[in-house]
Structures are given as C-alpha cells and as structure tokens.
Image (cartoon, rainbow, N blue to C red; front, side, top):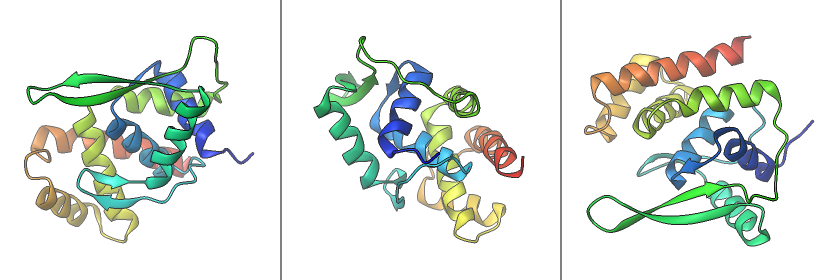
Length: 166
C-alpha cells in the first residue's frame, strides 16, 4: 500500500517517541528511502547532506493540522534552536513491523553518523562506488566524516542495503 509522506513522518516520530532536530528527521527519511521504503520525497544535496523540501512542507502541514508537535529547544552555545518532534498525546500511528524495526535501528545512531551515511548513500545512488562516495563525503564534510563516524555510517549502510537485498 502506498504511504503518504505525512504518514511516514508520523511513523518515524511514533517509532522513536521523539525526533530531535529537523536535520535528523531528514536523514532518517532519506535512509528509509534508500532502504526501499515508500518515502515519496525528492532529495538533493544540501549543506547538511541530502535534504528534501517535500519533507519540510509535509512536516509543516502536520504541525499546522495538529497531528505533530514541534517544540523549539535551545541547542548549543550560540542560542540556536533545534526542533523536537513528538506526537500529540491524543494521537497514535500504526507502523508496520519492518518499518518500525528499521526506524528504531537507525535511531540508535548519532545525527552525525546518519548525516554521513545519508550523504554516502546519496552519492552511491548517483553511481559512485563506496570508496569514491566516502571520499566525496569527506571532501564536503571534513569535520564530520572522521574515521569513527565513517565506521558507524558503514554500519548504517549495511543495515539499509540488507533491507534492499532481503
């Protein structure tokens, strides 16, 4: 059954209980798409890796409709804010077992690892091999794409590719 992008977003928030940051939401959705889940969004490479305007507008309309709560929380020393997404208490979302499991597995990783994995996956889908995709990711994200983060990113990529094969 085809899922609306809004449903997928609600599934992610439901399966994780809360998503800390718009960037994290973007990366999880992109990785789900790379794992062949039905995520109907167009991603492009952006300052923080793969980014989709479709995801931004779907999340915004969920908030406006009252189906998703968005709270701004101070993050970091420069008084920047990150947005926390939660389901309103009155709402619940049914999530299929395979989707829930994948979301929960992805959610164990740091946002940096998700961002790096998402970027490598983007370049691989674009036709680069793993080594070249990692090289290109390190070039655009030198501060994030450090060895331990790359190692975790590769675990994430194994996770999503397993789903594609299986």
